[in-house]
Image (cartoon, rainbow, N blue to C red; front, side, top):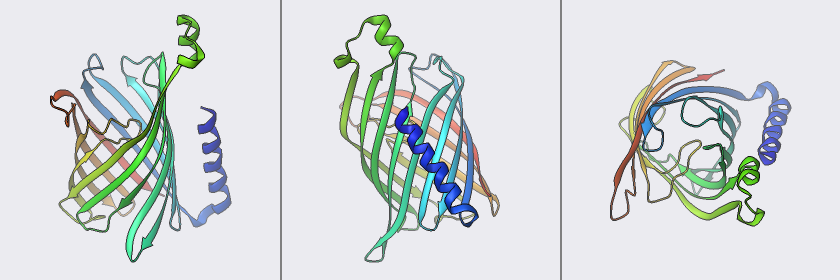
Amino acid sequence: MSKLKYLLTIFIVLISVTGIRAQIILKSYFDIGENNASEGVFVKSVYRVNYQYLKFNIETGMQFNLISNNPNTITGLDILGSTDFLVRKFPLSAKGYFMLNRFSDLMYETNWGVGIETRKFEHFLFELGTNFKTYRFNSGAINKYNISKDKSKLRENFNLRYVISAYLKPHYNDWNLGLSCTNVDYYVINQSTNPVFNFQTTFKIKSNLTVYLDLWYKQAGMLNINAYYFGYFFRGGVIWKI
């Protein structure tokens, strides 16, 4: 948590330094679905702030559980930064992030990583990167079950993260349909063998207001010998440019 607090402080400082010369984008969405671990329907809400200055971008957000078998109310926090650049006239975006996922009352996950993204092709988006994941027992679980400090966490290094998306219309069209295969979401990064399929719809109501509705579907072990249904959820939200 302390690392994330430092990153959020940097985010606030950047806003105060660059002032009105940058653009602020507000995002809000709800997730409604079920999976094999949710014990019924879950509902989550997320609120995000995106701050753009020249070719630099920094974004932070918070996830709340509304209906869930997870007793935690705030279940996700993250901050990410990116910058656009050219390599021999080929547009790329480099990004880095830090994420906290409080998926249980006994354990939590921290994750940080880097990636490269391109929208060079009008109807496609590609992202490739790596991440470093750590699962930790919280202090309550350590005391209750007498867990030794050297056994209180598990690390996974150099995990593969990827996004492959195809769109009916060019990027930034007033409306669009898309399909993604990825192991990445805001507060969850799956194993590379467990991709999620995401069907996306977007519609720009005004120049500064966009609404969207996504359907996410996941099977466990998709790239293993056996694959099983895991879950789905709908995501509906708005993007507002101030």
